[in-house]
Image 1 (spheres, rainbow, N blue to C red):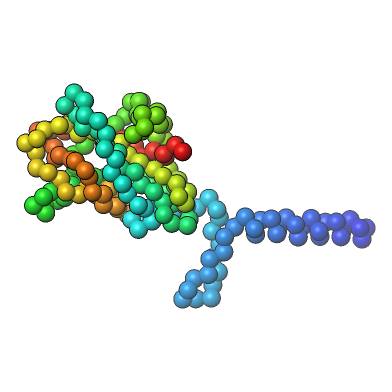
Image 2: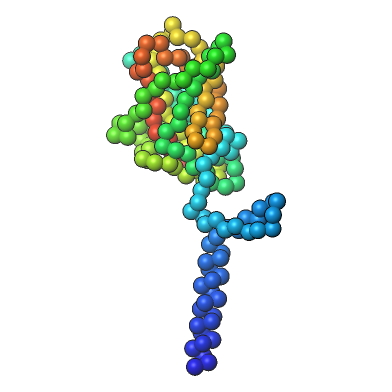
Length: 185
């Protein structure tokens, strides 16, 4: 009987040790309480966690294509929503919503290297040093005011990017924005 009790105690200690090792303990700086967060709870990205880069595309049939690539420069993973909201900062300093239609999930999507990508329906997780992007298409209309900056925003953060070229929407919206997708390595 003593052997079976000892075996059970060793098993229980190993099970508790394994469970504890799978969780991250965070001590709040203003108190001595400890809270436990499981590894599956990844928070929303905030602006400073992401580096942004404008990637020029091609122009075809009166449309300009471009991508905005976001790199997680933090040491922890974070996530982005399915779509981001876009706002333009024009040359005169005014802000204008980018009235772009959301590209349907069923529409084929290519990255800037002409490789097919598959955006997911729902938020995506970006690991440290991982990358995500959105694809943009704009009407090629020289009568529109020049855009100096583009802001990507979501529930918990935002990020500015400096476009190489970009025009504002003039007559209606025939531009599109894709779902956020992970960049294949």
